[in-house]
Image 1 (cartoon, helix red, strand yellow):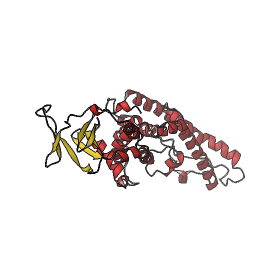
Image 2 (image 1 turned 90 degrees about the vertical axis):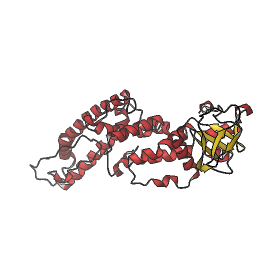
Image 3 (image 1 turned 120 degrees about the horizontal axis):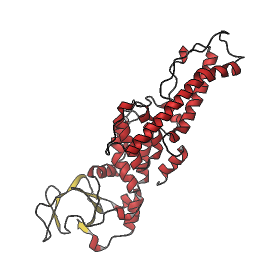
Image 4 (image 1 turned 45 degrees about the vertical axis):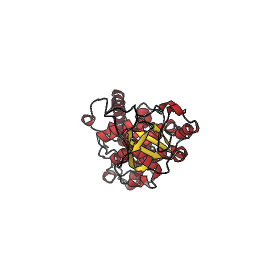
Length: 336
């Protein structure tokens, strides 16, 4: 992280300030300009013993250098190298540091730093939409300013909904049932914040949507490249499902004759009749009870079908032009 990304130019408030009854800071002196924006002390994040004032949009946050440095590698390095006096503005004896960030994102970040149990707002049953909204600002700023524990917590919440292992995928109660807008939001958030580990599954969910439900290309929603990746992945999934279906109907029948001749209790002339699987090659088959074969054969089919589903999972990154799972995981956690 380059420290020059942090805006250290003096904010638009004077070193000679007075506080109004509402906690606002007003410019004083000859440099004052009529109509200049008033900076207001944040009602919850202005600590009387704070040692640094963060100036973000219309709000001022008086917080503690030691607390920020403890949580953030960026601030630890920044505070170890004080800025020259001519670059500093003072309020209540504290240096003012302007941040060119969204005010709500900074509030979310500071609440995550200062409030025990801040993440307990979310529950295991929280919808992906709620998770994305909750972590969006914290994840972005914890990535940019190197708050490793906060970033780690946000990633864990995201991966709880977007699995990166087949074993975790099998535990999901509602697989691939996210809407198009939710998936586009998740793709943008994961890419912008280097959570590469979440991308294969979220791309897969998007590819499983009916083609007419995928939003058309707009710069604020999904890039042309992402749409091409999803379309290419969908074509690979169709091919894979055809191959799995052929194996299911033809290959398993041949294997059953070879592997189960001593345990199969089917009628000698009984043939396999199946309802074909849907276009979701990761999902389990829903009609095991309707197979016209004995229980031993059903168990054999289930084992083989699970093996093929696992193979699809292992190849999922390749379907969407991504590196293997292990490389994606390393890239996700490298900044921590």
